[in-house]
Length: 453
Ligand code: NDP
Ligand code: 2IT
Image 1: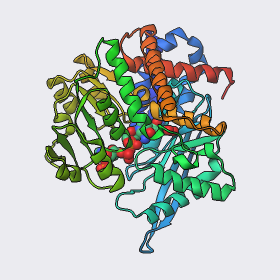
Image 2: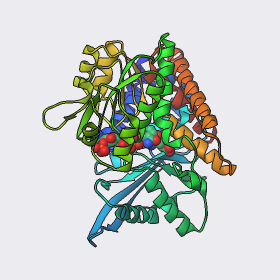
Image 3: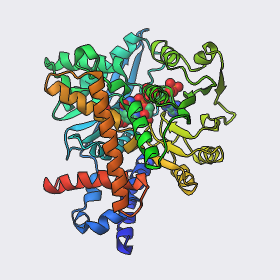
Image 4: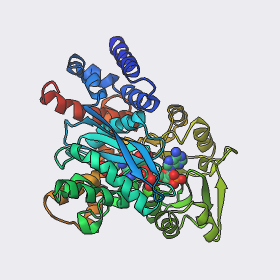
């Protein structure tokens, strides 16, 4: 990269950091993308003239709102709701809603920023956005969850629409929450507008394979990465972090492809199961009972549970060849990466958004561990959301086999786009470079054609 391009990128980053103070995760996500774009700017000087990076780093619209609700004892609670409508050059804003006490504007902006490039990589007509609330669903009854979702949607609905902004799930938001929100949207607008939310139930406009899509897609992507090295998942040992939507289906598909999945985790600890993780039991514990993962170990004959409180234990201590972080941001740090390398790990792919810290990525890179960044590796979820929108628009409903086939093709295409862009921009085999450049160029080209937006 030329000296003045490097200086330009540094200046842009400093300006983003100055204009968005205290938003550490947003800065981290921007830094990661910008560090890949030198070769793109060398090739496309017009993007510099048009201030394309500066424009993409500034959300089109940011909505912050009050969400009041009452618990089962009549106590009043106030949460803060967010929707960051980041970029609509390629299509309506698209991206999930996260309900977790850690949610704040910086987190939503990092997720929305990632979503722009992820959605571009799918090749589908979807822009980027993200939202959520600092609401903690843990321990809440169904009635409390419903009242919260109804209050949240009572404000958010005015910003949504199948051609405007189409949310889905993320941490703490699954089929139950999407149902309550869709019900409230329908009631307020008097429209059965199926395409306004994705991740719906099958009997009311949902799409087959959407629940499985992020985890399955992650494993399809991993299989492509391994195939590019002349290898496969068969017989490999795998560790997955998290035990939510993404993790469960990553475990299931990895097992279907012949891998041995030894461990998974939640925010309190992890389980190691020498028999391989039992997906049916995991789903019973996490999805049906909404219990802690320790309940899994109590029922699986050869499983043990390790708490990850003060002692510094981590699921990444469990030796594996393939590591799939599927819980949350910055959950795999430098120490964890060094441990994985010591244990002979050969591939890390991100099911979660930005789970690997900057320092950890560096450790993996230097050790020659193949690394699949989330914006490529976990794009199967949002891609299948786009398939759900397609089915809603045509009032159609596809079979499981057809939907899974489409997902597999999409993941193969995303892998190819990343692989080819990495070669084109001077870093063969570097999926971070490939994903960032391919995603950025697709968005920037559209913005160029649409005038100064
Ligand atoms: P879920 O709410 O279904 O599951 C989240 C899992 O991660 C739980 O096991 C949870 O443990 C754990 N977790 C959450 N926060 C923390 C934390 N701060 N520390 C440790 N563990 C934590 O969410 P999803 O599976 O949907 O999402 C997981 C990740 O994948 C997120 O990064 C999300 O952005 C990303 N993603 C999701 C997609 C989707 O379609 N759902 C698509 C693409 C990416 P506990 O139950 O103890 O809180
Ligand atoms: O991070 C993500 O890609 C998601 N949470 C899924 C978004 C979507 O609109 O399906």
